[in-house]
Amino acid sequence: MSETTPFHTIAHIHSDFTAKFGIPRQSGLVESVHSTIIFEPEYRNPDALRGLDGYSHLWLLWQFSESMGKEWTPTVRPPRLGGNKRMGVFATRSPFRPNPIGLSSVKIIGIELNTTKGPIIHVAGADLLDGTPIYDIKPYLPYTDSHPDAIGGFGFKQGEGAVKVDISPELLAKIPQHLRESTLALLAEDPRPGYQNDPARIYRMAYANFEVHFTVNGDTLAVTAIII
Image (cartoon, rainbow, N blue to C red; front, top):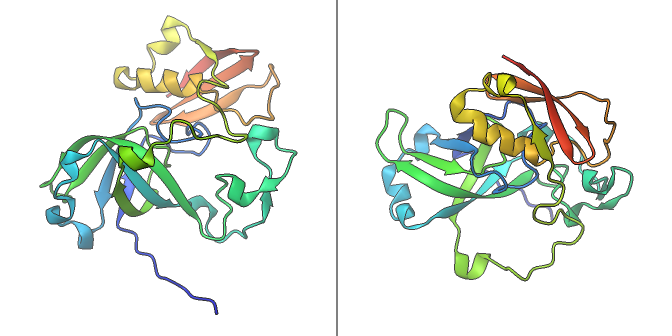
């Protein structure tokens, strides 16, 4: 018998990611990216966050809102494997799932309990598009949630895929100062899908209120323009 369980959006995240291209492959990779979680009116009760300040990290359960209405498939083509090899959807973090639910671990950098928008949680390291609906928030428990000896399958290893970022002082100066660290860190993660490696191709990454144009040759990413 098929059962349907209703989900309620309790909050939305607000970030500088205005497009999917350029969002880190996983949460926690770029902690200099800061976001805010703003609750929906019916969940703006400060009591719901009581005790949260005793934790350093959170789990966010959220909706793949850009994939809503699309059919799930039992196999997908992970960009990590060049985009031409199929793997089971449950062996990946593809958004095309039976239920469009994402899971991210983020760092708490601040909690405001009484604002005009109710309680607000400031987090670092989120990999969510601006406006993404959040279904639930749970504390990260290091004694049980951390598994340093876990095997990562065909996913990226720490530091794998990183590139050296080459940007002129003139172009760097065009980036708002408070966003320079996060912009360079995002570029260093090499936002390209794993199957794209044309050194002549110019890529465009939208971030905050500007766009970064760049090329990648070998292990060097060269910024060619900053469009405001």
